[in-house]
Image (cartoon, rainbow, N blue to C red; front, side, top):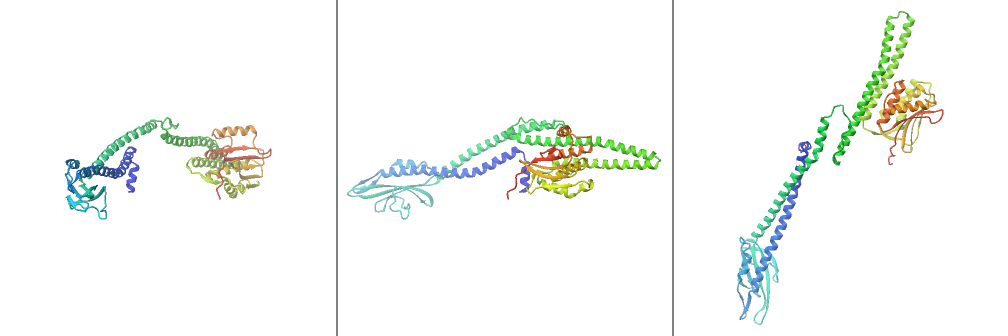
Length: 465
């Protein structure tokens, strides 16, 4: 069975729709057959019961009394009615008021316990075959004859069954014809529905591999959902490719100068004979190597953030935990032991949908910038207000001027990197994290003597207790 369903999933939509309709018709055909047979049997029973009742009434109306005795002249019309069931055997019995058979077959017996049976029908047998009987009573109240004479007329059930089967068969013919028409119509409709998909597939096949512009959404409403999903996927792919292109470009630009400087210092060292100058060259090489290592770490961090931003599943993250983890790692004690770093988190959860490692990387970059360019003390915190959740780093410095803050915002909103200092690359990483998870990087001065860099997101509602 699993293999069957696995093959069914790869079958064409046209075949799957046709198979579904065929199964539906088969199941419906069973119910229709049962209903049609029941209807046909009831229709045949009603029709032939009327013939029996008509024949019995004709016979009963032909009974007369002469010399105190009932006289019966069987009418031909009564049996002509019964000849409509030409394959059936016909039997009759006329019963006197005292229960004797006046004429007909003695084998025809009234149902037991129904001696006073008046007009009506009952089922029985006729020479071993199932039969249906009609009973008509005629009352005589004369001086010489006082009582009820009963006329019983019956026939076997062959014609009735034939009629019931014929009605059922014709109903199934109609069902089969309509089912075939429905299957063909469904195939035509499916082909018509799939035509836009074929058009889209042709358009995508003819596209340039580097063309990630949105697909034209002039398609039926049902197909538009898939096109929108495809466009969102292409937009994410385009963003990732652009980020990678920017990363490669910035890596080439950022590494060219320090690598060239290291090469130049190495050449100077090889040509220098003075020991003191060689020592200074070694110090410069060490300084530049440290700076280059820090730059490479930031670039690798940015590559990690770009990758996780579009590929990692979002999870419910408490920003207080992120701030606590960064604080407890204690990198600030190594980078700048003279700075006082304080953790500022509350009791209320500050939750967002994001990726925890990316948030930690962004917060570390904000903390490193504060330790490098700010003033002690430095505060790390997380807070929520008006449906917005923020994780931030604040120092006692005044920060850059308003014109610089405005320029930084413009550059980062455009998604490019600041190449003027290593802090620009760190802020670019923070900005990438913010954009990846639907937030923003906010650089502000809460007071004249404080500067704060925040990652702000939409806050999640608190979980029910």
